[in-house]
Length: 306
View (cartoon, rainbow, N blue to C red):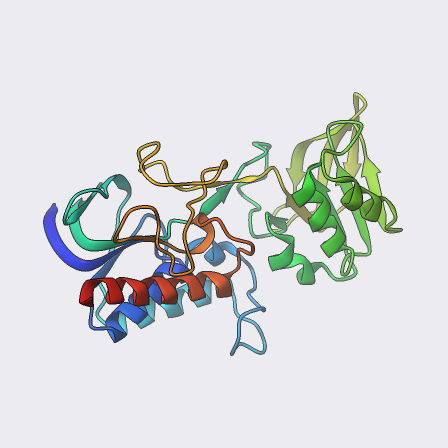
């Protein structure tokens, strides 16, 4: 059990935001470490293909991208501790991070723990995640060009996903448990005008079928079971920030719990930064997370050297 090791910058999260922050911390001469609960690369590792990041003209698998990120940290001698963050005392000096593997101290802290999707909780969802089950049309729509897919949800995000998917998919089933959408009327009108979209009102998903990839869905529509043959299933039941380790009210957030920052990624607590998907932001992509991480580490160095 390791205890009370102090760093200039402690980075919570080993996704693109955290990894890029560590890279820029090294360049700035800061001692840093990363605490990651699962896998270096974050959620992108579960994605079959990443093809919207510069310098990979043929795309790259999410798993390979994650391995390259880890290799880069090893080359830079940045320590990565695989542990769960249990508590963060961010008002202390130095700031204290309590994990399942010990306690670490940082003069500054970057929160880059990302988000997780709200799950439907149906059979097949977890096993086929990244194999046809997706939570991000912007990330994965291009893999379903000319194929039939389904979307579940009725809010703005589900409608926006459907509009984006319509550029690629030949057929889209939009599954909604009610008899009307919750999203804004402008989005509703656009979706209902799309010729390849079939809206399934009063419907719920009971099972996602498939062995190594999605092959279909079982739904219940108006009390009757129906099977849809689809290659992809996009779930949008919302996302939530990975911030259970933060005491409520400790740091300023929006109404959904996403951390509010300024353009330097500074939070409401001096010396604490947020980057990537956990931040209140317009776009959540690998490239924007990396940008956030670079800004946050540079701001932390400026803070420490000033």
